[in-house]
Image (cartoon, rainbow, N blue to C red; front, side, top):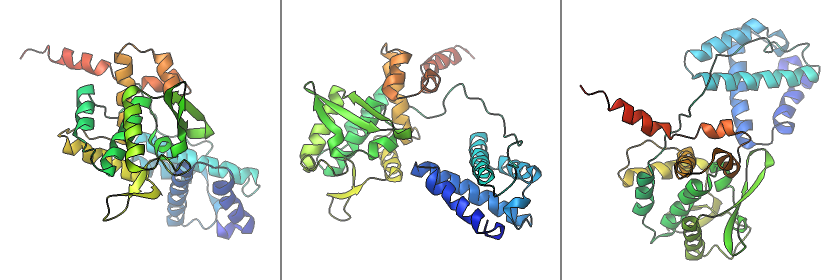
Length: 303
């Protein structure tokens, strides 16, 4: 980028600073751009204006050997957007990635591991709530499963985002794309949040993070927000301690909650609204009710 001139370098930095607001998207796009530029350097390309569609296509083929199709499509989209930005800034005359096709990928069913309701209850009941970390973990897991919250929105909450309205506890979630989503708490989640905030003394500090890290060696909450990576480690640790062998992620609780809601007679349209999805097609990826049907049918093979 630097060899293409100061204008190219500045335009490159502006792409990440000015056009992308979500830090996770910025991190992902930066990783894709760095990988692509490193590949171009290996090919002996000395300037961004020397990149041709053949180079982009060769890079995609290389990625397909070691990465899944969704990851490759994401990285290609990131590079395509970056090069579009350079075209509109008159750094390069055309976008060499515009004509390059990524791998085909069609999803009819989500791959996120989910739990049976009994397993989810088993994990929640196994948490020792006599400590601040236990109260925090139960509240965070409960929030994801009962409100279908994304982990990014959950760990981004402040104490003031849990509020009372119409004599019930409500949540305010700041979702992707700057969307603010509010919904009432399930009665179990209401109990978990009350006991967590009152038991740890954070209820009187409304502008502080709701879910926090633990001070090393003290067992008490710090003033720092809990990172997503720490939440992922916590979820797997709690599952292991409860004797649940399913390999979980933070998203597993969202999928588990949506599936349990639909099994309980909920509608797909209402689930879409509760999960703050833009389309019921996305919500359908979390609907795993057919898993039980498939298992029943497999057991019919009487050999």
